[in-house]
Length: 493
Image 1 (cartoon, rainbow, N blue to C red):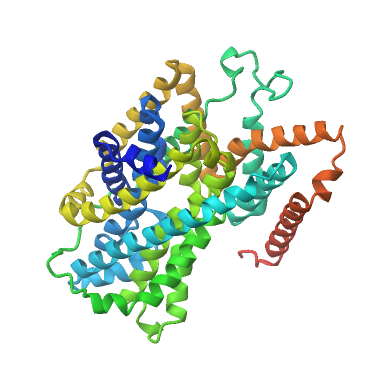
Image 2: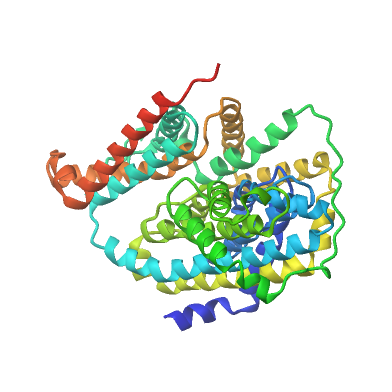
């Protein structure tokens, strides 16, 4: 099966999609204001007419490339191209300002590559084991896991638990629009026949992540500052094998942090790169040098944020629960092709699963080659004015939303969700809980109904079954701990 999976990817067309996705992902990730989540959402409609392996390979390439691309602007502009590259600016730009931009880029690219490969090794080894365990799950366990994931994301995606829970509630309400899963009774359609099948996932995603970002950029009245990149030369790498081996402990620790944080739903690269940077500084013999252009900081940041990619795919592939924002969009990519991620995926679509694993490895290799080969081209893209770039992105959003079902109603849904996402950003409400509520709502409802039908309305087995009871107990504990922390947090004066 593994050999068949590898051969299914090693075709000219699939490799072209992987390489193209990785290349575009690097460009999107390197441009401040465009995120890898936005890029993957934008290209979801493109995959609609592809085979599952081609479409998902393209999305995986965008994921890997977009996560890595943020280091370019972080080092050369002191502006993180993505949240996962925030800590890269701490030492990357000081190194560039000192004339060591080539060395900073070389270290970051290599650490991105090896961090990603490390997380993929964990993904390959852990996913089949978790999937085998999850095969024994029933409606009680799936209900508990989905509720646990939703609660965890709602509590960790913002400074306010109330805002996180409110966003998750909005997502759940949106997921209830359309026919009920068991009775097929129409709900919240308000007389619109287009809503009988529910709100289409793709227009909602494009609106929340792409249109909302465009509206936020358009709202800004600040005069755009011309980008001035530091001069660099990749010939001046200043990085040897011996020097690299001296950073092995830091790289391993940071990769473990990135993979572990990636597995936890709702955190991802934005959190792990800062945590890994802090851990590297804590265990360093020269903590006072951090922030002045020390290579240890780059190793920590770039190893961890790329290691989070494989970690985020572990719960997605084994349980159907995304580990971060972009993994949630990837979940939608699976669903568009009629594939439901989870433990049965390894049984029914084994060739596809290992084909995706192969595509991830190839994408990391392409990322390594492309970053070195086309670095100067990527830097030139940074100079494209936003008043030219954003209208093009908006046009692609409209085309993508319309092309799903060839109806303007979906474009209206995209715009409505774009405005909703923009309002939530203005109100400092996290969008991730809304997205997870939208995706996990049907899973929660269906498994709750199945469990209650099995027990004739008795909720007790949800609590008495060992696995589901333990997961629900952990969920309650997390909510209580989060509430206590909210009350203990000092209020701003």
